[in-house]
Image 1 (tube, helix red, strand yellow):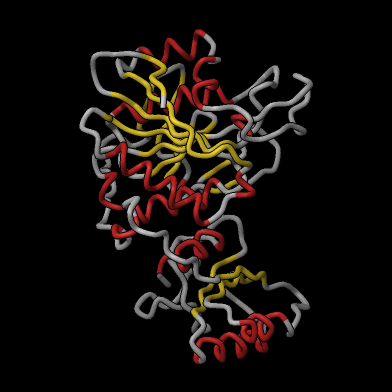
Image 2: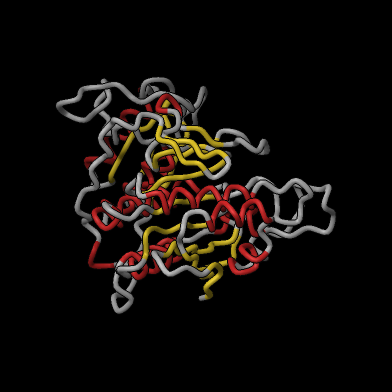
Length: 335
């Protein structure tokens, strides 16, 4: 833990998880080959250019940095999520903390965002958790991480958002809507049909619809696992499977016989699967396997029987969640 910027007022805490934003490479012109998570949060803050430092100092908040993990986000595990959540809770409980920033890799950012959104619940009703990232390593000549980090601190200090949000490339997205949609470009994230909820430019934060009420944050059902003294719960075995043309009829029975706890099907279109898969999924559900449906489409949400919470073919689904976030949600629901 290290105080990076000092102030006599409130603080913003930056928790580091590694990722490209903390990545190092040998060639400043190279943005695709590097070691992710090589730099600590203290190093990231110390290396900020003067313009970014000025934008942070203009918030009037102190900044405290702490490295929770230094990993490539493709390697993130169940235990990393809980360790991060517990450190977030620790700092949220500090009266002087205005909000938190989490630096993270891009590949699994949306899953971490949804996990934190759910397990933290009501704890973020007054203090936001802002996740940020980068598509270029810290050693790149045109690194995008410094500005993203400065923007995220501005959002966390603004007092104008609640819950878990993602700030990247000057845009702020909700944890529910955000998704990575491109493997390499700098603006690799969007929020689907929801779009962004706010913007940050030159240190100025602006809500997209400032008159709209901020969303309520519900009570968390997972509070009991957020104290360091409590063992991290065992992760339920939940798999995502993609329904495709000529989908194999062998996959689902193999998972069922292996003892899977749950399955999320990234279905075609509006939650459609072929008849054989539908029968297999129904049999798995009767046998006690938790089955959820999502759409493999990158934009839009499933539309089905709202009263039953099912697709028109009878598969349960989480409204507005894509497949990977549905998997996170199902893991939590099976605890």
